[in-house]
Amino acid sequence: MRVTVILLPLFALLIAGFDSNAADRRSDRDRLVVMTFNGKFLWDGRPPEEGRVNFPWKNSPVEADERMRAIANIIEMHDPDIVNLVEVEGLNALKHLNSTFLAGQGYSAYLVKGKDTVTGQDVGLLTRIDPEDEAIKRDDRPGSSGSTLKSVSKNYFAKLDVGERKIALIGIHYLAFPLDRSRLHKRQAQADATLTKARELATSGYDVIILGDFNDYTGEQAALDINDHVPITDVMTRLQRMDPANPDDDLVNVLRFVPKEQRYTAYWDENEDSRIDEPQEYSAIDHILISGALAEHLARVHIDHEHDPRKLSDHFPVIVRFDFPGAASGPDG
Image (cartoon, rainbow, N blue to C red; front, top):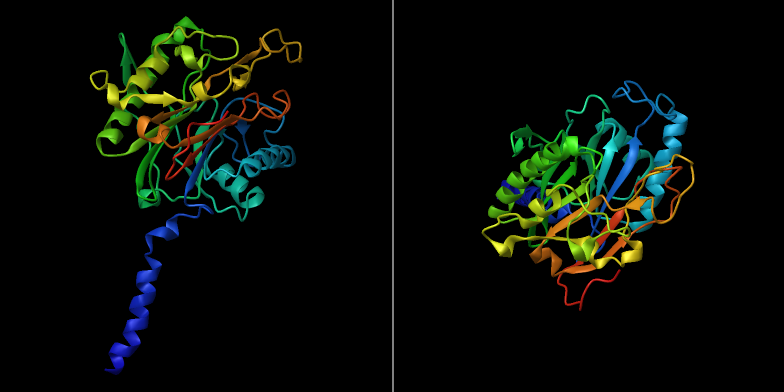
């Protein structure tokens, strides 16, 4: 009997330790806020330095920390539960950002090393909801376009339990230069590779979110950017259509819910005069694509244009909020 008395409290502690809610550190379980942001060579300035591209804060911890602090301030301002970060140096840099500048915010850092050895860039994840098996993974299978086969050198996928929902994230960074025809089939092949994984996840019962720097414009009339850029590829159409035989599985581009005059996510100094020529030097190449089931709970979509894209990042963060359960009449811009 004495043994039973000792073991029962211990057993109760063990059960409490395996509480599934312990993996969800959101302050409001009725909401989910997701952000994607290209941090423009988000390096920590400490050896070993990745890639063969040079920039002022490379090998400079002081300058790198200054930029990280600014990125962290933007993240804190929007208080997202999930942050997809593009152009991260590696897991050490992401952990440094999290532990030094986002301490106490409830994030865990995840990153799977990619295959871009030229830039050294990767796609990382900060999340208050721990992925299944405490891990994220890569998918290196190539996609196809015409005779071109190509995989996504910078990607991850993560499976999350968000309350009663199962959500799968696919974070990506595709080849650059939207209007470069020499890269048309390569980027379409990358989209095809992502599509294969997205279909598998959807078939397994997950609501899918594909997010990141697509380096491409949408062809959807309702979501065209501030300058009506039209793609030369079918990247976005291919991804949003998912299974062409099933119209019910289409993905929604959240940009359609942003007012036209605010619909830009990137800046390119086309004439190299170090000035922002508005609006012609703006475009929308960062996207968040969501399943129709998630779109029903979409409460807000916002693109934060507050920072100077010449000084921090030449991209702007895209933030979405879902309300669960959501009975809102529609998302606000």
